[in-house]
Image (cartoon, rainbow, N blue to C red; front, side):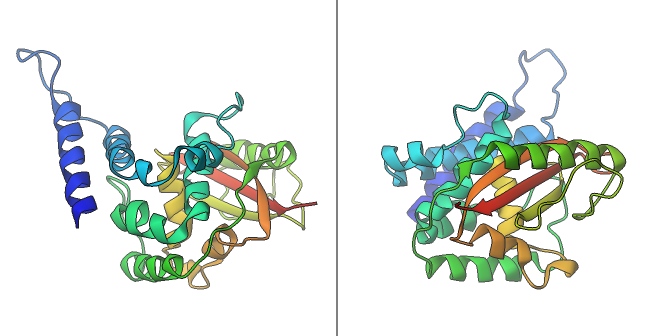
Length: 234
């Protein structure tokens, strides 16, 4: 309960800053949903990040030095690797506090699948960290760019020049993708009527997979399309 109390205090302080106007005499501009979600993430980090050691956090940021990735794409590596470093701790911190994105419907069976996720993470041991892979990035970038422009959904690469590798596992997300944590939690919770088999979660928790490429691009029908491509070691 102490973690939750400290987190709520930190979030409250950040939201006051986010909601305040620059000058009292000027009209107040309400924060965007993206700004709100990033403020929530900052509050979580201030509360929870120190529970991993500095070495663990540095190792989790396996894509931090890659100039071709944007901030959110690097965050996907970081938060997914934090989860893999200590699944029970991640369950009690970031996963427990995540309750969906601002301004978006949680999705079919969100609450029950979040509960099942927390129980599953509590029973898991550490897994290998995910390392960036250039070929997997090229695959994800191609599909997110071309598929997003065409308005593709799912994993169908029809109409693109992107080749699908049969040895590759893939997760695709369509939404605001404001933070890397949100992208990771979308797949781990796996809400939605078509996701009853929890296929995305199974990929994220597959300890055989240790390489990943991430690309988040604009989408014709949704704000963003996130593509995560995975492979095992070779």
